Image 1 (tube, rainbow, N blue to C red):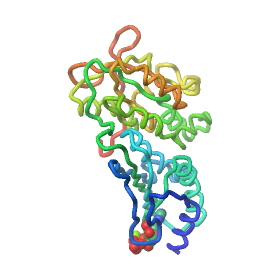
Image 2 (tube, protein in one colour):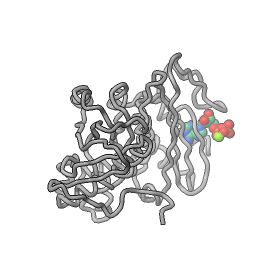
Image 3 (cartoon, rainbow, N blue to C red):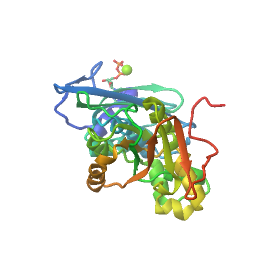
Image 4 (cartoon, rainbow, N blue to C red):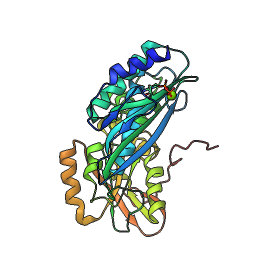
Length: 315
Ligand code: ADP
Ligand code: MG
């Protein structure tokens, strides 16, 4: 049974990359890392009831389990190449696995990623994906590196997935917002383009304030954001009052946009990237000496969100 499931996954995710010397089927995969490049590795788990409701569409889960990992690679400036998939299933449900594999494969194909192995076990529904990619040695975008005077930028729009989650169950969530929650688009091309331009970068998974806070502490700096500059989608703006939409953008999670810092002299290169990358890039604030992230409204008053972002194990 387990082997039928593995075959169902393998058949749907067939992808050829000539750097896969040995893929699914042996005890481990053999991969060729090009000379002069560093391997970039990350893993992220999604657990039923914590990261997604038990009734979530399996194809969306397949897409998202890979997307959240490709977003981490994008935040490092890496080109994605390979993935491994550990699936824990309550039962050997072939329909679930087929739909899951199709959603996974849709993004894998679009991103040129080959699934090269994994593990299939029984237990409470959970998905762990490991993504691997590479970049030229020494060129990774890290959280440390932001300097006072840099501009703070973010791709796309913020708060859409959190807005969809807020409306979940009410049946009224806008289709665009639901799509942003179910099928986030990892900003792979922007991440690659930011090599040599950004001084620091992170992907926004836990909420902008929390994630930019990580950049600040890793870099030993603070940041000042302008509330009015946060990019909010027309759909979010139409669904929530302006103040609430911006709060979702500040501290709602699951955006999978890139937040990065860049010296003002390089902002023209960032604008060129936005034009080529198919998503907007907004300037939302500045890096300052000190620590922590402050947010000001149009009148210059400090804005204090009720919570900064998503955290596991918080009371
Ligand atoms: P082993 O017992 O040696 O760990 P498995 O029976 O777990 O082998 O897996 C057999 C092959 O199928 C391996 O190449 C493994 O990487 C692959 N595989 C198992 N589960 C998955 C999965 N969910 N997705 C992709 N490949 C998988
Ligand atoms: Mg195994």
